[in-house]
Length: 112
Image 1 (cartoon, helix red, strand yellow):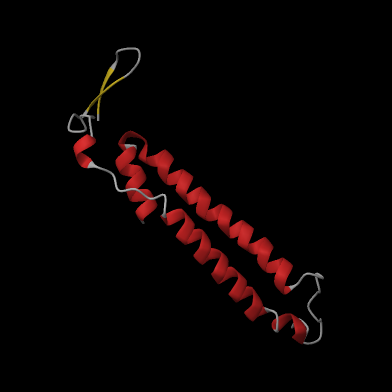
Image 2 (image 1 turned 90 degrees about the vertical axis):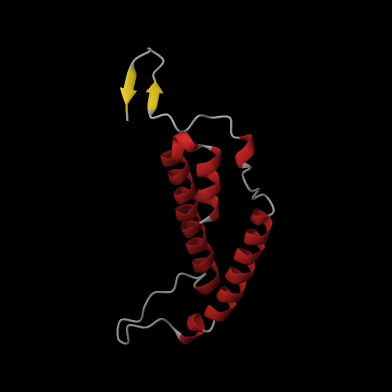
C-alpha cells in the first residue's frame, strides 16, 4: 500500500502511529460510504417485509445508482489524493537508522 510505504519512509521511528492513522482513514471511509449508501438506496428507511424477508422491489432498483455514485466518488478521491503522493528521496535521509540504540530524554539507554 503506497500510503503506508511512503509514511514509513518519511517517519521511520513512528511506524505504528502512521499505520494507525492510515487504517483509521480506511475505517472512517467505510463509515462515510455506509451513510451514503443508506441515503441513496433506502432514504425512507423502509423495513424488511416480515413475510418474504425482502425489501420492496424499488429499493433493489436503486442499487445500480449507488454503485455508479460510489465508483465515481472513489475514483475522483483516488485521482485527487494520488497527486499528493511524492516518492521519498533516500539521499536526503539524514537519520542514522542503522543504530539499534535509542536515547531517552532522561539519558537512559535502551537496547532494542
